[in-house]
Image (cartoon, rainbow, N blue to C red):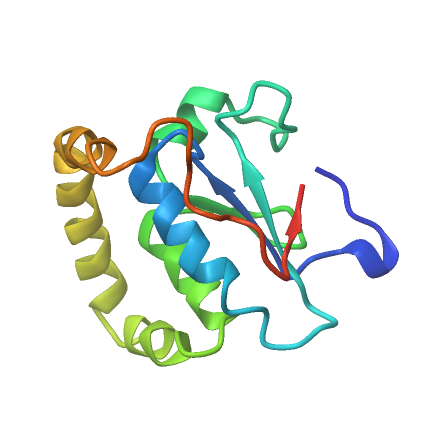
Length: 145
């Protein structure tokens, strides 16, 4: 993904749009808007076959964990990705600051790894609440890549 000039986002969120848990969470983030209009956050549903992927990644690898890509191309994963996203969103910055305390990011990563083990069961449960043919609204003030 290459961004130039004014199009360059502060972050690109790479999410699994086929996951009902991920869709719901991303919908919440999109409803917040970026901290400032000159630093938008972009969202890319990597479950869509036509979605561009960052160099050196695979779709399966991106679908396995939460990722964000920084403007300089760095790919962050798991707890570090959440911390970067939360730092860019109003109402979530306190959690990002908390995660920057010594040992907190490590602890958050351990909890995230536990969540990943339970994710398939939680996805099955969440799918029971999806209406056929409907997905939670995922449009908002952010740009879709």
